[in-house]
Amino acid sequence: MRLGPLLLAILLLLCLLTLSSPIAAQLPPVQTDPLSRQAIGIQGVSACSTTEASSCAEAASKILPQVMGPSPMEENLRRLTDEIGGRVTGTPQMAKAVEWALAAFRAAGIEVHTEKYTLPVTWSEGETHLELFGPVKFPVRLASTGWSPPVPAGGIEANLLDVAYGTPDDFARAGPGIKGAILLVHSDIGSTWADLFNEYLCPPGIISRAVKGGASAILWMGARERLLFYRHTNSLNGEIDKIPQAVVAREDAMRLARTVAAYPGKVRVHFDMRNKAGGPIEQENVVGEIRGREKPEESVLLGAHLDSWEFGTGALDNGCNAAMVIEAARAIKATGLLPRRTIRFVLFSGEEQGTVGSYEYVKAHRVELDKIRGMITFDAGIGRVTGYSLGGRRDIEAGVREVLKPLESWGANRHTYDASFGTDNFDFLLEGVPTLVANQEEANYLPNYHAASDTLDKVDIRELKLHAALAALTVWGIADRASRSATA
Image (tube, rainbow, N blue to C red):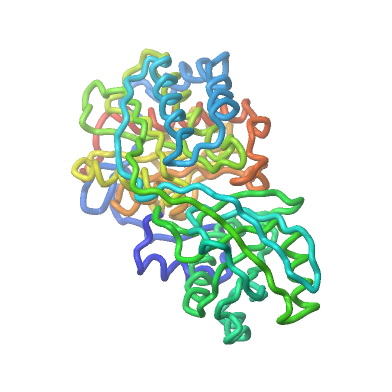
């Protein structure tokens, strides 16, 4: 996410509130034609033509056999995950993933190209180690957060200070002991979408308080059980973070907390983390295209991010949906139908570093944003799709419902109005482009999120095929509407 000071302040405030639903930033309804993009009269998401034989029904009848029958999607996904593996933006594995995407699109008969941008910094984890000096000693398993700076040469020897959940009151109770200390911050086990987003909403305030208090480093208690390693970044703009940070395996972190409680002020540790950061590097988004037959200058986007963290192989987050976007493109192409407007299939890089790739896409295409009819994003594994998050846009709901009527029995036409800002739709939403983010059941996504366990065996291929059909019909229906709304 590209977070300015105002938005960051809002996010920190949200962390202190009890949220009734995950990442719900409710926007007021737009009082305008229900098929228009904005009140100012820019075109918007609409249903398929109602004046011709239903193009949505025709498209669905041709797309479904393509997707639900034999297809290359599963083998494509196997190559991406098992052969290329984890794909951190800026690494050789990410470059291989771009080549994989280009080849898969071309094999599907889709015109494809890459669009370059500059990632501010490259990063990799070095040797990471924590040693206890006493009075109790035991091995501690931990891993750096993404884009954390290294510790100074020779490591840090300091007191380990438990600051509970790192709230302002917790820091006030810790007082001057924070200066120079290595802080241990607690977490709850993550089991809901709200828990997951709190893992991102709360750290910025804690980091700010730690830096202000002069702490040397932060150790985060893992939010997963059974010693499961995973990686997040708390730097949300692609830059190296402000203070060294690592995630400690949950069971080890709880043992550390008990030790500190038993011997207050007496637990000293040596922390070494030799991370490596490099300079700016050119990266690429991959863009496939089916050109519109009547209004090719207007477009609809279907997107997912191609990058991942590297402990696992990025199957649920988000390799399955990258393969699904290519499959949706293949299925539409195979029907022989041409949409009125251009459909673009975009695989973004840099998402895990703060949606850098999609931000750069928006920046590069700013002059044509008013001609983008909608941006559709999938980024939550293989949990059953229940509908789309419409980004506060109640005005587009009727049109989306009409698009999905041929698949009404699938239960995927129940939409919400919350405005998601945790994936590649975000900068499009800020620019007023209608965004549709797939609402998905949690399924097995959260236990494996960013973790060593995020591997191909977690992917339900049948469920992924259903998503491919839904995505293909959605993007087709928006692209093929016969006419603009009255206000456009």
